[in-house]
Image 1 (cartoon, rainbow, N blue to C red):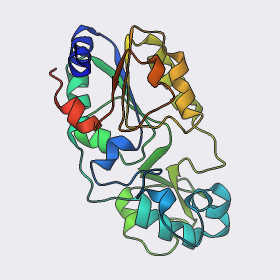
Image 2 (tube, rainbow, N blue to C red; image 1 turned 30 degrees about the vertical axis):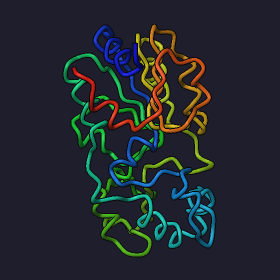
Image 3 (cartoon, one colour; image 1 turned 180 degrees about the vertical axis):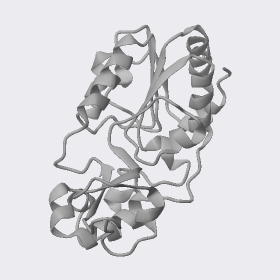
Length: 240
């Protein structure tokens, strides 16, 4: 039996599916990933992306941070692709219980997913560091220089997890809960290279582990279903 048919059969049989995804889920929506040939890590800036996306850099060089952030981390034109839409469809059908994502683009919610655990935060949430007032995507994107709070003048910070910052404990707890209760875990569009996020899949004790990614991952040898290909093309063929 081919792997796509095995995936279809497993989805049909499962009652508690959890999806764990990374940058590869959004590349088909036009958002560059971090480690591919033309990803952020292979582009030339005055500083490497890891430096510019660090907490220290945000504090020390906020203008430089926001220039990079607006240019490379915010994608106002991006739209959900076939993978996002299929996952929302699976959730609406009662099969998919949670999407756990390393992405910050909000495309899962835009596609209609309700239970989305954003391990690394979201570009759609921003708060004043002084008074905690909330600001949306457009406020940041349309601002220039360092965005300031219109209430108190404080500096605004995106609710994204920067290097040197820890993940949100409640999001981690919910992720562990869903993964440990799942009968099927689908890992898609991630190299599983970023920790501690990638370590969450160690909590899976269910029946079927499916890995869908264009390149190999450290978990391939443990997968019950292994498909090397586009996550959108693969999930787009699944019937709910």
